[in-house]
Image 1 (spheres, rainbow, N blue to C red):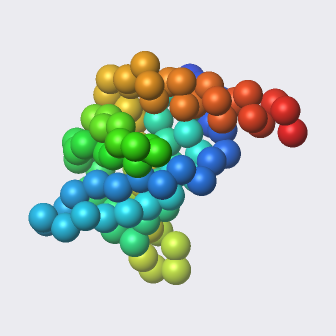
Image 2: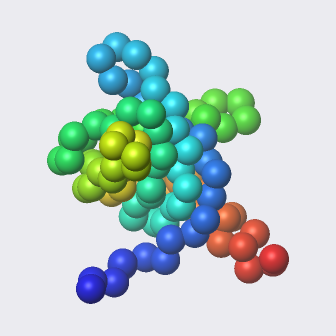
Length: 105
């Protein structure tokens, strides 16, 4: 079994992305410096590349991702594991703030 390059941190971060000219929403259930797991009613195919938006207080952060895996629950594909292609410094700060919060618990 391969180990992840970065530790995954539990989260409930809202994310959104486009599919077929529609805005889709999901919840990032865990995040790391290099990827995240997203639960959503819509999954894009493996190896798809797209822009993922993370809504912030007064704006949003856009990051490029690639779907690495999809998972099925009760017959529906509802979970995507995505790799961040070029994590922005602002995204890395978000991950770090989740780490700090987790350590404080």
